[in-house]
Every structure is written in structure tokens, then in C-alpha cells.
Length: 209
Image (cartoon, rainbow, N blue to C red):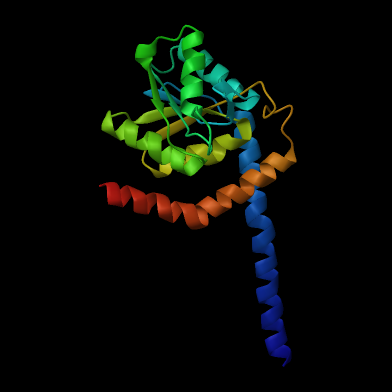
């Protein structure tokens, strides 16, 4: 009986460590990437979608657009891809709202591509990955929120692309405004992706092949 109790206690201790250490490690990784991420010269910039209101980008989406525009004008990539579908009942898509905003900022239409697909990070990643593959592009700069960088880069890399991140420096999701709630949410989302979504993304990739 004592022997069984010791085994149970060890198993419980290991389990406890796992549910504390693993999420803690990824929470730190998400925080660290949010502070350290820097865009590197790539084939394309991708603006991940966020809310829009009748074609007008929300503050979060506008911050991503601003970052993509800055990176493009720095010459780090020759094209910008906007991605994101519309919510039920919406007449405008996130991808379309981003593209319209970029055109209004004098970004040439010839360097823009809008992919009106994706209501979450994973489906958006699969959508733009298919576009990149079709155009024989291999590397991407992802314009998104700082604490979203880690998961967004991981999903792109898992599909075989070289990925870096251009974290938004303004808006409600910027480093100085986003708190631990965002990090905790991203930790849960990343763990869910690695345990469930990671399988799905590879299954989708195999089907398309």
C-alpha cells in the first residue's frame, strides 16, 4: 500500500509540474517574442485580419496595417497580402478593409493581394500559405499584435515557410497596453493549436497535395 501511494504521489507530482511548467514556458516564449520580434527581408508581408466596421478597420486592424505599410516602405518585402473573411451579415471583409486602407495610403494596387478567407489565425494562415505556394514565395513577414507573433510565426513555419513578425507598436494590443490577459489567452490558443490544430493543418496540407 505504501509503495502504491509513493507511485501515485510521483505521478501526481509529475502531472502537476507539467500543467504548470509547460504553459509557463510558452507564456514566457509568447511574452519574449512580443518584445523581441523583428521583421527580416522576405518575399511578402501578410496582414492578419481583425475586426472591421462597414469597411473601416478597427483600431487593432489599423495598427497592423500601419506596421505593414512601414515595413513595406522600408523595402523589406515587395508585396503585401491582406487576409480575413467577413463576419455573418457583414458586407465587407477584413482583407478588403485592409486593402482599401492601404490604397488610401498611396500603396500601389499592383503590389496588393486580398484573400477574403479566414475567421481565425489557423484558417487565415492556411489561406495565405496556399497563395504563397501558388506564386512560389517562400518567406513572409506577419504584421500582427506583439503577443500574437509567436503563434502566427509557428503556424507559418509548420507549413514550411520562413516567417518573421512585424509587431504593431500602436493600438490597444500594443506592448504598453496589452496585459497578461492577452498572454494567457495566447498561451491557451497556442497549446490548443499544438494539440489539435497542428494535426489539422498538416492534414489539410496533405489533402491539397
